[in-house]
Length: 281
Image 1 (cartoon, helix red, strand yellow):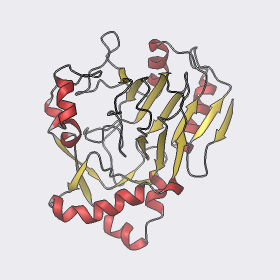
Image 2 (cartoon, one colour):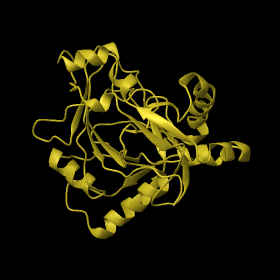
Image 3 (cartoon, one colour):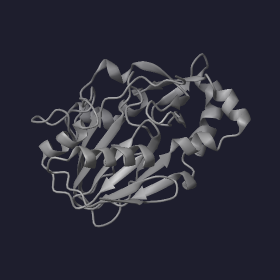
Image 4 (tube, helix red, strand yellow):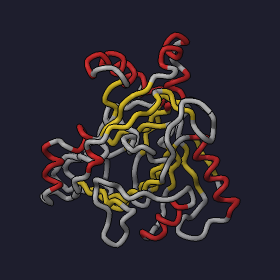
């Protein structure tokens, strides 16, 4: 096994391992450590059945079924992410942390690429440890103990989303009270395994600070959103058929680049259950 860092900020490609068979405990331990060290890890040239992807993701914890986006009929834990030819991408665009609107947001996301355009559709990841660590001491002190409200409402009530509830798009959603539910998470999140602090707000699901209005919250949140995605915190993954990405939602944000309108893309996504974010031990 060969672990090759992608950038100085985060991300690593792992070579010399096949995920379609049974991983030894030693190999899994090495993969898990790379996952913690780099925040996002990537595998090339994999040939995976749906069962293989599920088995690999389960090594990291119990799997989730999304309350809003419909899973596959035969594998409800898997979301088939389809972007038809000639249409704009709609799923995963914009900076976000997967499912931060859950009371216990997703720990990890496992995404496998099966139909890939000849170019475009990269995914950009941003290290939120670095986003926290590069803040001034005064900003860190101000954010310490601050909490923010997260909700799926804006992301899942757009007009194009309503089409999906009615079965008129390639991906289908089901209406759930989870769309409107609000949850509270610390702005500075302590990673339960590495014990490092990360900035934990994102423009897709974070609505406002607790006990503040959206208008009052907007200036500081806008600054944090820009800071979170600084290029020197990022890595960029170029997809190929048979690529698999696994990233840690507790310390990373990501952005799906929508620059391949002329091409179809089909991916398969599995998420691993996480825990309730905490600001301190």
